[in-house]
Image 1 (cartoon, rainbow, N blue to C red):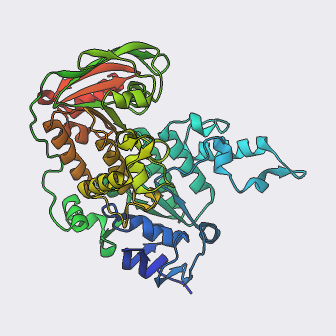
Image 2 (image 1 turned 30 degrees about the vertical axis):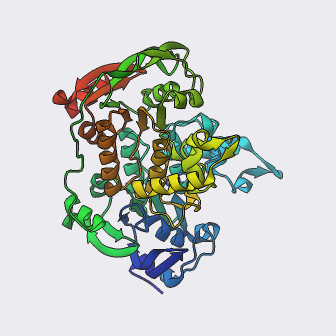
Image 3 (image 1 turned 135 degrees about the vertical axis):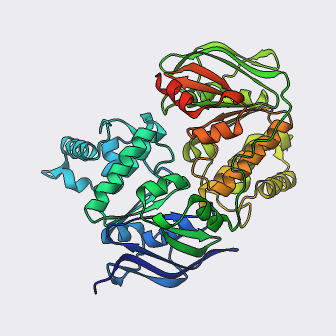
Length: 497
């Protein structure tokens, strides 16, 4: 039976223990349409898409695809019917190549005389990447790629299935401006060929570039579907949070004291060279620059994830040796890493275990963990950070991206750090949660902490920082105090113009 819609979801309800994740939600996707799905973290966006993908079975409701009844029992089932998804958290196999990841499960396509032909697979991958305008070597091992390049591989894999519906969950969160423009080209080409895209993003401005319709969810319920041309960003925010969100970047003054943290001539050849800077108590220092400029690599070496070859780090005026993360923690440092999936959390472990991991030494006596103290501290941190969770024993991997990020920040708060490094702390997080994290940063600065924020979003870094350093080609290219912040000048320094 013909239908005006490609995908229809009617009165979908999904209940988890203690949580009604979806409450009679309806969603309709047209043919050849880019349709945004937005809402705060925990609003039900990912859950609704996992129902469409067959990862979850709805408790009530029904779906139709191309006018026919649709009830997938698994992602493979949905894929066979023409629905694929680019997940917010990367699902690639690090030890496999780009080509192997893109065609995983479809190796039979490249068999010759009963054997897989790596040359044929590589050729097909190169053709696909060229078609999409993605400059990657098919034979590169994925673990060698940046997070941004991994995201591009995810996009290429989803497109390779030639699906009628492609769900994109925060596809631009790790991409540079140039790569984002390339993604827009890919989406427009898909639409031109009659495909449809469901676009989940917290970057509201990009929805107006790429989508013709926007559906808003709040607290597991349907709020509205609007034509993009008929709605403003402020109206969308009010729909998502149920109120007007005043002052997205609520910068509050903090007393800036003496230098607490200093880096002198830090170098790791091939990644960064001769990096020097200092941070004072109560100061929020921002790092910006293009993807691949060396921002994250500098922070990882400071925190002992990677080893710098030369240079010096001082805490409270005294040199410290940071050979590993344990030494960094002992030096009263903490770091929220850019990559939540690989370095931020252990997804199969509970919220409690993830939050307490970094401070277990503090509650361990004679090799026994004080479990009562652990439970109290973790529950307090869940309450303080506003983490939506049925129980602290719930797997952290089952939480939304924003709630995972809040749990990771909570983990480091328990270590009571004096120096806090936040690498892309609001990536993939809704506007309400972003505002909460900005207020936390203000509070920590006012309590005398030294805070370093790495961000790809210039409005964000200009809104919350006291001073900004621009990184270009592994070096500090410019410094700007708050009174002189100018987005155009920062971009010029980032590009070396």
